[in-house]
Length: 585
Image (tube, helix red, strand yellow):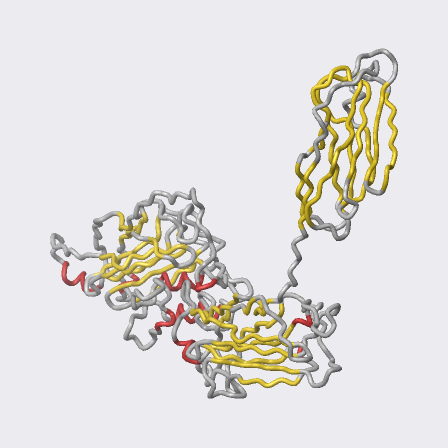
């Protein structure tokens, strides 16, 4: 007969319950059994002994008796009666012993099985292979460490969108009377309440009576102002920051103490009681000119927490788990060329006014040259730049479209799908159709103006292929046409040219024309990225109408066999998707 398990090791708090079994092995026709169970009452308390399933497994009636020998020993036995059915045969559990771990139980002891005996249904003794004990070990529970609060800034990452600060976009100074209205607010907080014991009264937690910390930053990017928070309401604070100590570059510092032993002290079990300070971060004036509202614009300013200290009323330190940093992404709202945190008619009109301007032109401004973004600018303001703004119409700093998440290091947080396969792409062709036309002259316009001539031929500017290039934002999808432009060159001494929209831009797109002496620049944009033009290519982008100049009649008449050959040249053909990204042709 044995106890099961043979060894038992637990890590338990006081009053943990456990059960061990009494097992008989390889018996035949079992009719009765008896044993003495002995234990150390300093380790466990006996809650009771229950009959196991084996003795009555053949449906013989069972009765049990127990007798307490002393506080650490008990006799327990059970028997069956009637001559049939036969008793249990084999190995099985005859009893369950229920125990509870005592309060101060730590160490090793034995749960002992003594005076083991068994008999068959006729009362004959059944030999047993001794009594086998259980080795029982109780490990002290792992103490729960006192939680240490973290000093942190909330939110840890955020955007600071730039807006116009006056007649010029940058402010006169970073902080102060002429400082920037663009400001990011961080709350310097403790992550949890102070729970470490007071050295004088160990049963009581410490009271927060003083704190200090520094915010280290790049003074070329930002300046920092510090304000005492709710937790410092009863404290006296000293602040060195951009306002109180402007000569202290790259560091802002605050320290607060409580005068006297009676407080008041903040209740750190509440959110307000853990709010130590406000950290206000403003951009330096030069930052406004270091970027433009293009895709992915932004500079990252690290706000490093340093020298974080907490103390109780006696000056004893309150240990901190960590002193956490934060990041600020300084950026423009994409497409917000007239920066006011909203892409609206001001932005679309400002960039539309500059359409066609190139570097060196009086109306050219590099802030409006948005696509391509990055260092490889194309030094002109073309239809891609217009569509970049038009496609973001209605976007604002609260809900940018497309999203501009405040990802650390200025990186986007979107994770590409592992199984995503970009669609196969071919570059669509743009040409005029037909490639040759004959313009037969009848009579010059009565007004003498080329545009009034009844003689005319038309060419269709076709995009001959579907657009299959992958969308830069969603590579599993193809780009959708949002804007296009082209330039038609001609000899003004021979012909004049007019351009009108084709079937693709009708309705959903807004088209504009620049008429110059030797060329016509024609472009169309989509005002909303959620309303792509229909139909999408292939199709007709525009119709070019060519009329003869009145002087041509004098050159050709009256000799009807004479003719002139002139070329109508396409140039600077550009396609863009709904967000202004180029579509290669």
